[in-house]
Length: 119
Image (cartoon, rainbow, N blue to C red; front, side, top):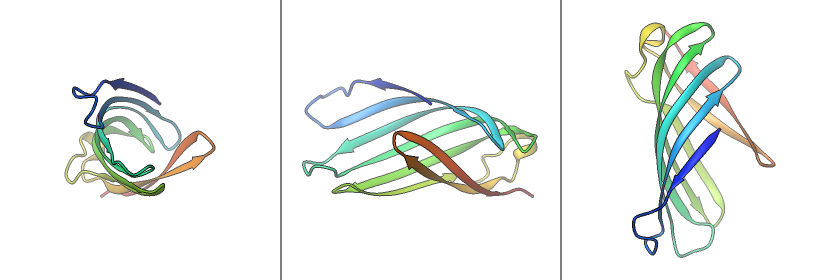
């Protein structure tokens, strides 16, 4: 996964913005492009982020694209994360796709578990 960070317009605001450029491998063979907005609070380890990414490729051999939306919070280091398929965003053979992703972090390596349904 490649992340390109763009500087916040107001460095004192604590706001950040990043462009996402991801590759998924496994049952989902796809590329994704997206944008992330984040903010940290004055309390160490606390903040919030939102992101949207368009995923294009194959899921179990079915071609198409779909949107993922992310919402995440950290409260003094404790994380809560939601990544889900945006309703009615599937195209091509992925039309009707619904589901969610769970992130697995081991050391500095990130992987995802994708639970989904297709008609």
